[in-house]
Image 1: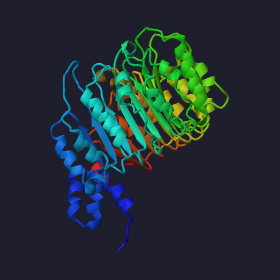
Image 2: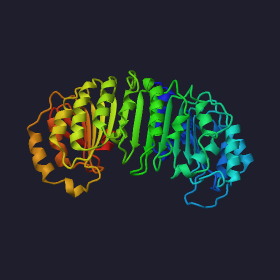
Image 3: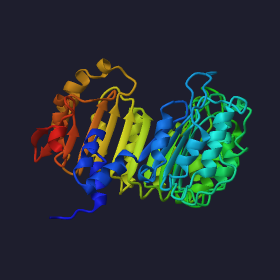
Image 4: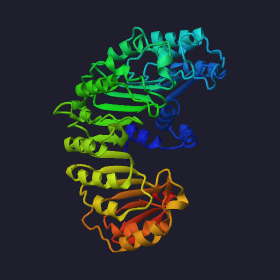
Length: 463
């Protein structure tokens, strides 16, 4: 009998639904341990849920705790001013936490606690207990979610995680500048203390980040950083201060040379400043990028020029996502992409109100492109854009095209988050001989194009 490594079985079983994984328990010894590892790899503790006590009793036993890789401490409150009390006892929590020797990911959610004064003492004690008793030997990822002041309370004063490589911060409180807490209390010293070992950093502030820029003024340079995600929104028509641009440019200047993955969504609505100097901070900026997720609004008044500068430096770019583009700027951007000889995956979000044949003509010149996803007509009503311009004009022109030099393998086209009808999908498949897979509406069917012969199959058939 062929012996298959347990790692391969584990990877296969990770795609199964929970019910199927449970059925593996009684198959044999190998699948018993395999299913246990999948079923118990994540532990979620809601400190306000009375059923959490039963979980703690179960997972203080080594038989189950050794499988836990992901731990979530859920302490968020939905309603402002809502008074909730922790139902978790310190002793039972301690008995479980100290057994999580193989924990790799820790998530702490304290949304709803807006300031030091409103942070409950019992919750403060539980979080402190977790930091002080968590083994943390294999902890690689940390995700903190809440207001700045609450995360100051959550961040440990003294703790060393030698294996930690990935930190995600999500600030969720509006009007951050009115909070009595400061990022310099414990959060920044904790983050800066890990600057020499962190490889991936994510900072999100999706409500009001007008004053979050001060966070970057004291943020250290991350010597090993290769993955960065920044996602900020500003108050409409409220200009970020000059210091904001200097602080983020300083951060980019120190960290851009080694980055291989960058997600940049700086929605500075109403600003008239040009952020393109960020891309020009030094000659080595962004030359190692392999993955780029870009919101053009991040550049202020000269998005295309700054985008051109960025792409001209990203000679090794393989995966690119472009968001929030109108048709004409998008066509110009696609022309620039011809310089990216290794680009294999492209995702586009466009506001175009018709499916433009010029886009297909331009994309067909990207010889290395293998996977293409287009979100078309975003924010426009479905009926307004699925008219004669698509079914007649576009399809008639498309019938005369044969992109024989295009090596595209997979394409997905969404219209207002819905897949295109199959009567539109079919001509697209005919025009691209190299195409292997194209998603269309109706039972999530896939069109497989084999030398212009179409085969319609379902997801079930693929399995």
